[in-house]
Length: 131
Image (cartoon, rainbow, N blue to C red):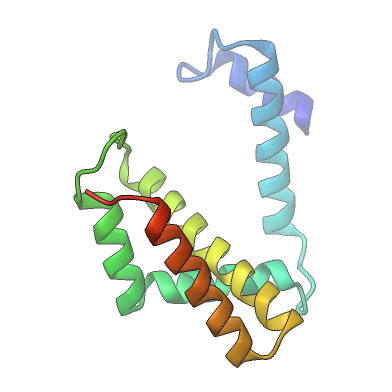
């Protein structure tokens, strides 16, 4: 399948002329997406669960506010991205928050985890400035 994808990518107008290394990585990524779509996953897969939670949060009030903040607010070194790329960045932020939350609540009880996250945010607020 990877060889067929490489042939297709080499002749397609969007990817024609790209380096062999780039096309090889792209073919591997596309193969992984196709396999994941076709092969039924484990119903207890933690990654699928976190992605599902992140999608729910993205469509919730908090996700909308975070998305608007990232997509519309000007800040230093902000790059102009298409909507899909901006959505991937916001989804990555949400997944990172969920992984951190799961990591914290897995090691300590939820009250301690909330206090630790609050202290981390306070430390970050002192060391960074927001425009």
